[in-house]
Image (cartoon, rainbow, N blue to C red; front, side, top):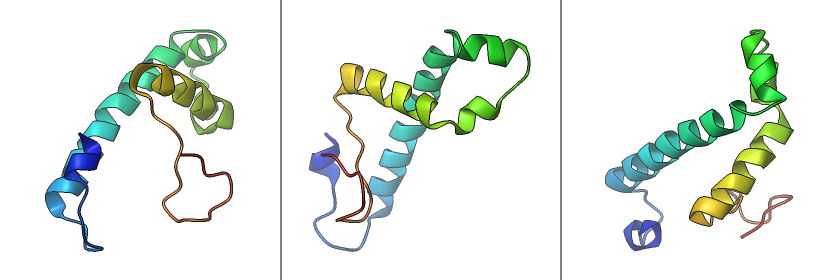
Length: 86
């Protein structure tokens, strides 16, 4: 569905941007919520230590779950950026 809505021109259409933003925000909250229910994140959360939210390991765990659920992959916004996978 996302590819069907993708603009054909370089100008990003507002509806497409809004759709992607809502999709990412709703699913990102769901992913983070699912991951932080498990240790070691659950323990850190109970102790009010939130620095793990800026952690690369948390991002990778969320992306692992996102791939399993929705077939998401990590893509850079710019072509040729380091570490891009599609």
